[in-house]
Image (cartoon, rainbow, N blue to C red; front, side, top):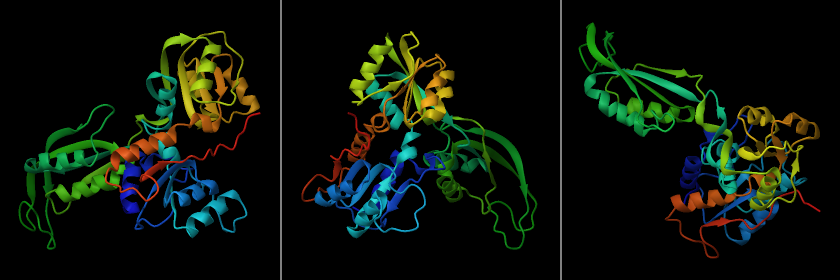
Length: 371
């Protein structure tokens, strides 16, 4: 199976456009045209994971965290990043990272986090901004249904829980073609007044290329009139963190014990108990200190995240229970989700000689140990 075929499935799972601007996601090492014999899914693509991939005859490693994150000018093997990259290149192993592309997905990291704890009715904590665009175009009535359906098929017209959304209005369009024109209606140098339908649809920013391709392919006019606007609306289904609720409230000690058991935490650092029961919980996998105020504003009784500094525990202000459960622990089950998704979508992938085609890494790459 070609790597390019697997890349399209990975982008379906976690569109790269969902990633934060600071991130480095997608194909980090490898050639899209190379043949893939097996896929190893891991949390961190360390040298030990590359060794595992070699032993299991997997030449694609799909990792959550990007092993290449910041700029790199030399690859000499002097640190853990360079050693992993060198070994991957030497053994023709491709590396692909999902990170915040999956963090922001409505079924991604934080939905997995909520599900692991048994939280219900979860919604996005920090909806993504500046990600919804609007297409406006004009066509003749005879072309409306074909064009609109093609735009729907390309991903336009989805708003929250609704699909195929558009607004259509009638009007009169005018034009006159020059000597190089080939008008669909009328002749060159003829002033044409014609009934047209104005179609308006919203779409996610990363779909713009696909939307425009569908527009040009299915429009009848030689010159397609269209406008694209950036909207200020927040995307209610895409963004960082989630907020959900337990069916029945727990005491603070019961809650922390549940978290410790479900996410297999070596230890939990937390702010002072508030004395309130825990029913509504905000979560953000990975480093989430920046969202403490968002968690408080959401009305959560507790906020679970990782990598909190000493003074940040004060920011709980006795309004919620703030808990650092560990970076790895908060994202623990993400790799399992990736494996399940790939196996469901790629059903014609022939197994390699040692293992099935898509494998969950057995390496524990958590760098934090507990005494």
